[in-house]
Image 1 (cartoon, one colour):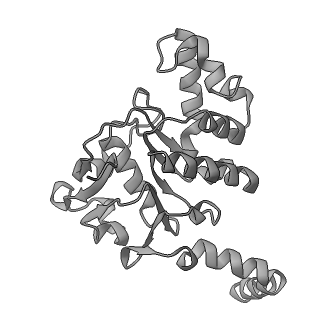
Image 2 (tube, rainbow, N blue to C red; image 1 turned 90 degrees about the vertical axis):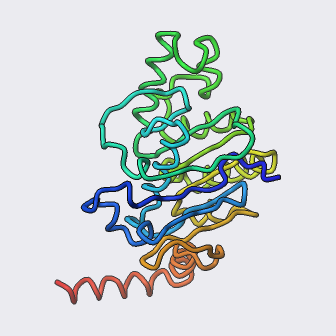
Image 3 (cartoon, rainbow, N blue to C red; image 1 turned 180 degrees about the vertical axis):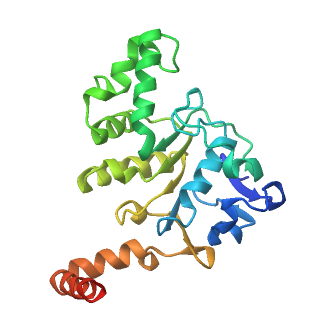
Length: 254
């Protein structure tokens, strides 16, 4: 029996307007059904290839607030419509996740602000008396972006569904490693992760399925085939020569 919380997503393009901007994303346009067969699924690819758009559609269909947070978070600072969610069908497992979180690096400030509103009102998803304990010992806005996110995440040991959009944006390389270790531990205990990332550290998670998004569609790939790994390796092994070459090319274009 497949015990994963999220098993597959399918896009019904007939439910989107013919002039929808979503049809202009090649990787998504060619996507019918996508299955999740590992506890860690990593979405890799260049900016604009549809990783975050797909992840947000999954999150909304799973009941998360589009801007992030737990299932219980309900707030909005910008209404961008239903997006891909309106054309997406999500296939869930037989078990309901006991906990879940949708992390978006670009809107974590807004989530932190809403957490303060919930704490002060006593009406939020986290009981007021354990708020500071759960969020690293102090208010999220009294910590750096990376401290607040990692402090919160390291307090999580629950099985559940975790959707993350570029979590590395808030973290130093050392803290990306800390996140990776915590993530792998939780996945081995039954938690499920779907993560859009450019990080060559996070993309190196063992036993993960990496899905590459590009102009030809979405396909499984190895860690060594990801652009993040190849470019990082090239830079580390040929730093000075690579920089000089890029500078020459830039001067020629002027």
